Amino acid sequence: MAAHRDFCEVAIREDGVTRSAGRIGTSPEQLELFGQSLAATDRVALEATGNAWAIAQLLIPYVGGVVLAHPERLRAIAEAKAKTDGVDARVLAELLAADCLPRVWIGDEPTGRCGRLVSRRRGLVKRRTQVKNEIQAVLHRNLKPRPPVTDLFAKRGRAWLSEQALPLDERLTIDGSLRRLDFLGGELEAVERARSPSWSSRTRT
Image 1: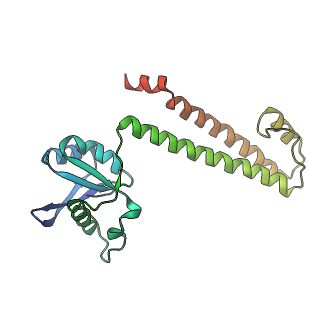
Image 2 (image 1 turned 45 degrees about the vertical axis):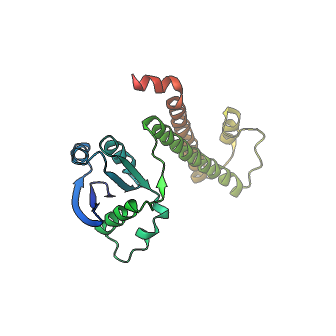
């Protein structure tokens, strides 16, 4: 299956022959109906991008196996001269039949949730570092000395920042950056709470 946001292009390989099976919608209802039409011995292959993990979770109960294929290693698709959804789906079906798909591990829902939270935390930390660097850049280009505090973004550090004489546009940059830091800090706290065992147990009840 070649998965997109609104539909999946389906190809079936049976008795050594690969054929197109059209499209199905990616709503849970349509995917459930598709899963019910499959046999318990069937296997399904998807490229591991976007909504593929959610699609796989819906189909797993109905088939003998679901394989998520590593997108960067699917050279057969990436280098295909005729790059269409139909071609992608047929290549996936043929590689699955030949057991030649580079696989990505499929975890259960708690594992997937943990992975998404870790990914979100990583992104928030990266953005927070970028904001801090913006503030440091303002100080650097305005010839300000090194701050006399260990943590420039804690209470004492912010007090020192507020005392620095800066052009209006640079002051706006620093003040806006500090507000962004506060927002990102709140988001990080929310992620940490969501990662805690007590929060996870409440979401399952």
